[in-house]
Structure formats: C-alpha cells, structure tokens
Amino acid sequence: MNTKVNRIRNKKEKIKLIYETFYKLLNKIGYDKLTTNQIAQEANISIGTIYHYFPKGKVDILKGTIKHISSNFIDFDEFKSINQENHVEQLKKFIEKYIKSHRNNYQYHLAIQMAELSHPKLFQSMNTSTNDFFWEIVQKLHDLNSFYKNIPKSILFHSLMIMYNTLEALVHRHLFITPIFNTDEELIEYLTQFLIFIMKFK
Image (cartoon, rainbow, N blue to C red):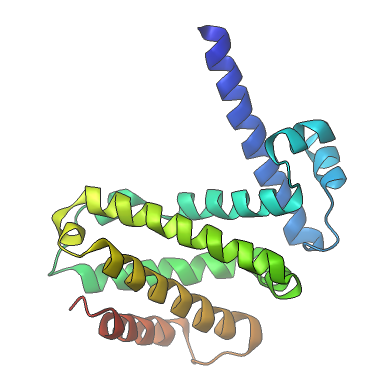
C-alpha cells in the first residue's frame, strides 16, 4: 500500500517538476528554441521519463503546464460566496488578479501567444484543450452554489468563453502591443462593465 502511495506521489512530483522546468525555460528562451532534452537536463531526469508522461513531447507539456497554472490560478473557494448582490465586485477582483498575473508572468504569456501564432496545429489543439478545461469549470461551478446552478450549463460555458477571450484579447493587446488605457484601473473598470453587459448576468 505504501509503495503504491509513494509511486503516485513520485509520479505527481515528477510531472510537477516537468511543468515547473518547462515554465522556467519557456520564460528564458521561448517555445521554438526549447527542447525536451533541455527540459530533461535542467530537471535532472531522463528523456524517457518525459516521454513516458508526455508522449507528444513539448506540445503535451505545454498543454499540461497551461492547465496546471490555470487550475492553480482559479481559487474555487472564492466562488462559494458569490451571489446576485456581490458578483460585479467579485468579477472586478478576478479581472484585477488576471491582469496582475499577466504582468508578473509577462514572458510566459508572451511565449505562449507566440507559440500559438507560429504553429496552427498547436493553436487548434490549444483551443480544444481550453474548451475542455472550461467545461470542467462549468461543472465545478454548478456543483458549488445556486448562483451558477440557476444558469444553464451551455449559457454559463458560452459566457465564460466570452469572458476568457475578451480578457485575452484586450489584456494581451494592452500589455504586449500598446497600452489602450492610461492605467490598469481604467482597463479593469472597462472590462468589468463590458463583461457584465455582454454576459447578461446582471
């Protein structure tokens, strides 16, 4: 029994190490120059171990890393107390956290965007993974409290996808290309009001 538990723990630790190493190297040298051999060397694990957990190599690691980071970014405890009265303020806090995360992890997000734009098949694969990820979130939110349960899953999914794509488009434009607002506070206020309007939760 202990051997099985240790094996599971060891597997999780190795996968986490691969994610963290990939993230570190992605920030440093970008997606195109990054190789699985470099990941193995930096993490001090065998190349066979990487392909054991990630048969498609870099693409699998990239998708897993994004899901790993996104899952850690979303704190479902924050969603438990959301209701009709406070959801606008909670949305504003989420957007603020989202922008702050992108500023703190600028090179990572820039590298991801460049990789998707340079590799059409990767872009398509990432879209599929994103859809699957948000369906998982929809299910968790539905199980979490009645505020979400009262919204049909298809509408909630559509609303979350609108929110995600709007945030990605405007925040990336603001941070990576040219500022479209004088301050982050102005961007946060605009995004909050815009998303409330188009998602029709109000």
